[in-house]
Image (cartoon, rainbow, N blue to C red):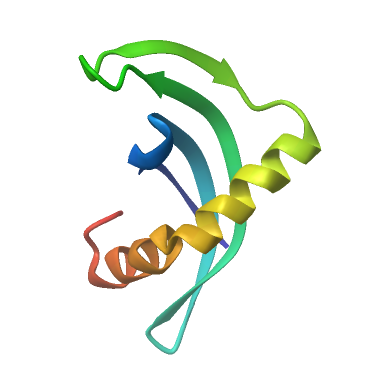
Length: 88
């Protein structure tokens, strides 16, 4: 399994979520096996400046953010970027 670091710009909630992704390649296709959120940076909606960053330490927090990442469609786009070599 290979691992990369990435982030998700969640503009609806004025935050950026940094996470690592474990994935495998099988016959040219990429399959994401694990998503581990690392920290969340909150963004000011007016100035777009970073306000503060907090770590994601609890299993429940990681599960919640990983679920939100999956339902946002961001991971599907990340798979495509890995396949084409843009995210690596």
